[in-house]
Length: 219
Image 1 (cartoon, rainbow, N blue to C red):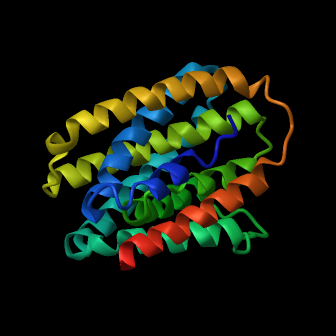
Image 2 (image 1 turned 135 degrees about the vertical axis):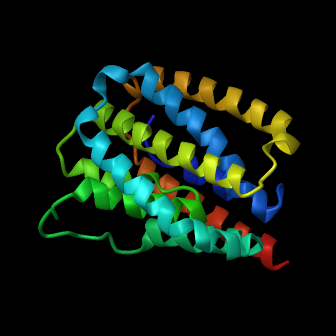
């Protein structure tokens, strides 16, 4: 309904139910279908003119990141994700006085690298598109399209590196079906929802989940 929070809420709920090494790959599959369905249900609002630059940046980010992923200890992923969520929830927003040349190449590069290690990075895309003056529908579905690219690349990378998605196929299938129904419900409700202070609600919710992630990991 609001375009942010879903991916962060999902990944913040997963520690304690899955091994650390499985969190980001499974999250990527579910979010791929969630964002794909969200984009398809309102595809007329997508801003395609930013896509090529974003893909160039994403591919570059993958080429830089792969050697580090092989050496990364994913047992500590929940704590890293928790710190990231707390920062984007309560930390200062990044203000850029001037738009750099190739901003969507830079954005694709940074988003893809961060996504490989912390999973949910949707707010980054929205903050950039928001400065373009897009309406709510264009903002949400264009962000969704960027996330489809990012998560598709992640799935390929983790598959090549040896993660066995087959071990979790039942869980993944159920989560994907649920996410698609969520996209249908959210798309329908978006134009009918009343104005309310959802930002404060999300901040409180994310803070509690981040603290839970840290406690589950250290214990």
